[in-house]
Length: 290
Image (tube, rainbow, N blue to C red; front, side, top):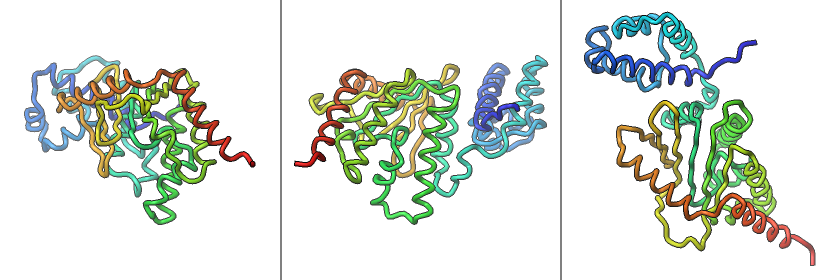
């Protein structure tokens, strides 16, 4: 049985190939839109990978860009055929913003992920019980509450159990590993989960200790996605979420510098695991009778 490629990965392949072909042809997006009779917004959506592409639209662009290599054409036509259809997260459309859906598409294609959260354990690493305790104060409808948690768990499963897993670096503030959500058993399980994931060769879990003092931080969590064949992307976590790429190099550079500074101040992996273990042991000791 042939493994189905995620549509967002096919859209990304098309986005990169067509943008480079257009640039080699010395054409602007406006030039292309006028020559093929499309609205500029249609081409922009294709070049940002937010929509699928028909084979006929692809052929029109390849002809205009004078792409003639048969193997490349066949490869891109297969990508176009696989660029439509639902992504794995489409079933959660009622609880996902368009910005986060776009981010998930990029996350699935990234070969590295670097993220920092100053308050809680990030969603990539949360246990189900921890996620439920974190979401409880939001007073969501039961069905929506369950869908948000299910989405978080499936995203984690795909990131850590599927093939082609990205290299991940998670920096957590010490506050995140000490903040109790739910009862002590919830935090115990969460800390055990962090220790387990931290043993994976592709995962680095680092803790920024209280002793680090003042540091170059931000108002919220963020994630940096790295690609071998494209610019890095920044996702800032807030109510709506936002994606920043090469269109704002100064902001992207600032967050990359921020992450590097935080990482330099954080404990290394063994020291971080030791701190997490000590916090875990103190929780257990507090529950002993007598």
